[in-house]
Length: 327
Image (tube, rainbow, N blue to C red; front, side, top):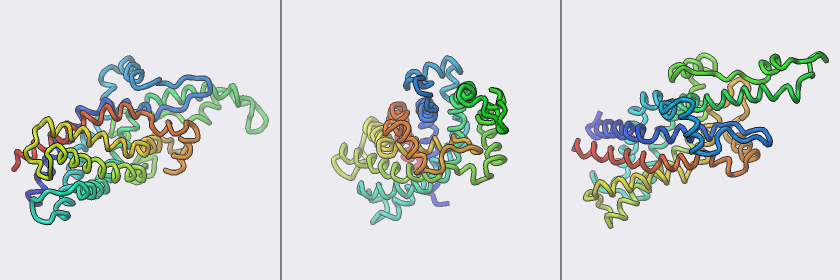
């Protein structure tokens, strides 16, 4: 392992921890809003908005509910950010005209896209576990609600002309909401019952569609903001405040550029394996738009944006600090 790679690994790891600690509560609310089922006609959704989701989560689960699902990304944050920043560093080395020379904004866009490809294969299984844990309370309520409502419309239609009781219909037609005890429990269930290792990569296509353009936009915006403040390519004299600002802008650009694909990724990853609602990425996109319009592709956008600025500001500043301290 080269010295440069080792430094990127270390700096990326610390950056990821900083990002996770600052941003995870926002991410929990985002996933809850994204994955809540569409309510029956005339019924309100489980969460009226971001603040309502925060209030209900705190009432039901306490502050720890905002950090649900953090075990999986915390356990893999070292790998995730090490891959992201190391891949970006290697792309930068390939694009440089001379060692240590600064890159243009367009070159940082290319480096970010390359890093996005690499990190997708870490992000997909990690986020599948995280989304299952974050969304399970909403999905459990949906299963009970659907089961209670079903007999009013379908009871009496037996397979052989007889009647079907409410309990029987609910057991047969409404999949039991699986309750997971933690990240390892999710992984075990998927490996055992949802296709083995391939099951952990459910949602890989929308993950790639998020990470590649998203990281291209993020690293491009980070470099563009730094160069704008510095007045040129040499950004080595920027203050910590400027680095924080650039990191916040970068995080916002990530979500602005790819948010709908994140919604599609989330609904696919929490979809029922035995009775799936979505056949794939395009089918999920069509069904979300058909049911809710374009606004359905932006469920949870507010919490995502609220998270992106402080979390990515912390992430990039931590990376810069560690990278500088290592020389």
